[in-house]
Length: 399
Image (cartoon, rainbow, N blue to C red; front, top):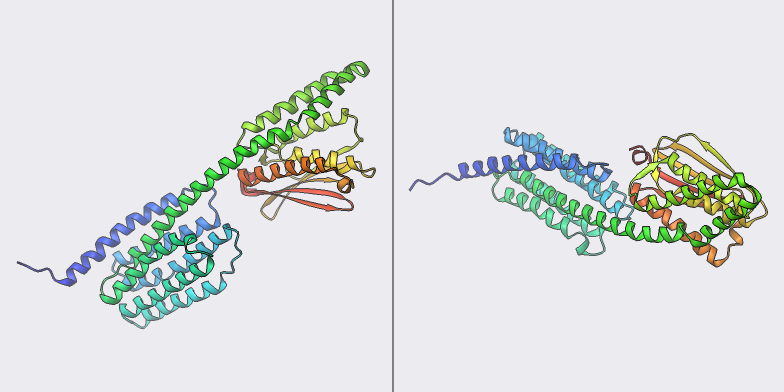
């Protein structure tokens, strides 16, 4: 019986595993690159895959020393990916310390390659690099359950580094890194699907509260009653009032079935219809001013109109001072801003029922902004009035 030399077996293992990992890395890279609206987190992950793929290419071409140098850069980039993951979860991470440690390890690998040190020491350094990663993962979270996926993924590069310490010519570091990235990517996709389902549930619940908030009976009753009075006082104003009322209702009902962004000017049509209706109701007179530096963008439906409503009834409407409501738009620092500003002083005189009505409307606006475009709403109150600011990433507003 002919025995195959151990060197040939190890060489076959090296080449077959490298070829398989190249194919897997290319597939993951293509799938990840096709993700729309790539966040900084997924861009770091794509960089990890690209670096690992570069190392595999060097290894299949028998440039093993160059492959080790490239492999040493994967974990520092993965550290950035994890830090960004923690930030997405609400934690503020300063990655300088961990990146500094991982960069030192990468420099050690480069020095060993330059000075011709063997695979044993390099495998020791790779093991240390992964241990540092595990320590970072453990410190970052309050429980093991929160990082179990990351910990399982890091076992692969640790095992391959240890195998390199036992058999100097066994070069599976690229395979270990590839398996780690595969597991992390599957976890990322699972998290994305779970977040999508959560957002769909939240959006559905928000629609119900939005319906109750926007189509509130007392406003409809008052508007119809005032239109009826107009028929006796000013017949020429009846038809425009009915058309405004019809448009107001139509925009509200359309918003409940629309899960996409709408043009800003379309939202302003809804605002204009609401303002026209408000002016025929027995309330304080006011003027609406518009200062638009930008209009070519999209926004979730029913986000500006509720803020204008608050400005009318809980800003200038609750105060003897102020009679101006301004809507401003601008683009700055990669964001589109929409501001609704009133010069009233009504915040101190709101009834408890009015505060509840106002808070529900504001909560609806915040929810729709967060779910549909990753936007936010900021409310600034002062003695001069109230400023409500809608802030949307320009990349989302101009899609």
